[in-house]
Image (cartoon, rainbow, N blue to C red; front, side, top):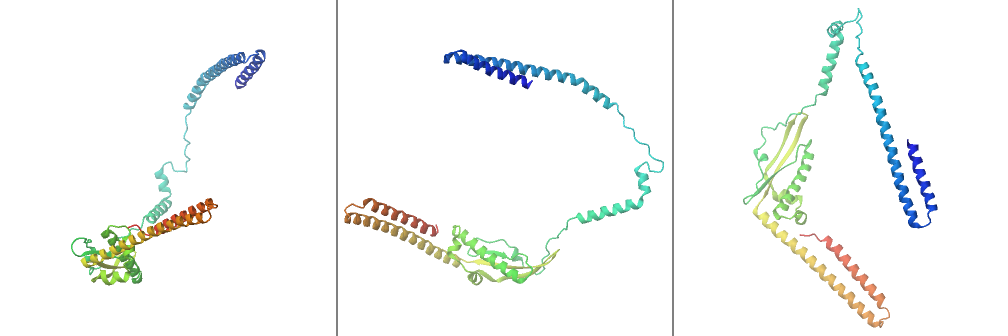
Length: 308
């Protein structure tokens, strides 16, 4: 059927060519083409209708055969083979015949189930002399603010002290940022670790102990930070100095950039007058390049100055 449709299309093309050669004018040729395309569409439609009819008839012929085949399949009955005289006929008989294999299978199942069970770690057991202040919430009201800092479980005292120093620095930086309400303010105030240990850590609130876990003992260290009113006032003074220095740098940068641009413009006019306008184009290009360089350099330097 596909070859038939192709033959129809080829015949339509040949008919178009013949008609085009017969009619001389362009308008008649267009009419011939339209008529040929219409005839081709009709022929293709007839061919598709024939294909559809043939497919439907073939499906109708195959339906009874498929129905008879399915009916024959349903009549087949599977016969269960008869058990031999020496073999057990039920699962109970098989179990009774092989008690040793059943016991071994049960043992393997129990062993695999015990191996698949996850190891359950119990919670930490704290010593009785552990002080209560290590679990107190942070205080951010009143004249004195307190924050409890811990090192976390560690295997040795050296690890605990290193982790505690990092936790102290992190807690102080977070408090400074929150108090000044500026993200990254602690990096400009720059409180050293020695200052934190001597000025902010409460000397009476030190604790070192051992916590028992199911996998073994672990050490922990606790400290309490005290932020007094005097510390906060000193922090405000240092922050005002940082802001003033930052503004002074920005003002100096802007003023210097403006002065340098004016110097470039004045130099251009002076050079242009001295050369009587013979090199005006080159001088203008050089002045524009100098000003652009100053702008880029000023933007780079301004990016180094923090925004407060």
